[in-house]
Image (cartoon, rainbow, N blue to C red):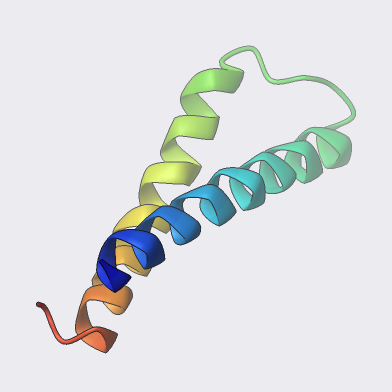
Length: 62
C-alpha cells in the first residue's frame, strides 16, 4: 500500500513540475510552443522514468 501511495504522490508532483518547466521554457522563448503537448509529454516521461526508478530502488523493489 505504501508503494502505491508513494508512486501516486510522485506522479502528481511530476505533473506539476513538468507544467512549471514547460511554462519556464515558454517564458524564456517569449511565445507558446507550437507542439506544447508533445514537449510536455517528453518532459513528464523523462522525469517519470528517472524518479520512478529511484523510488523503486528506495522502496526496495517490493
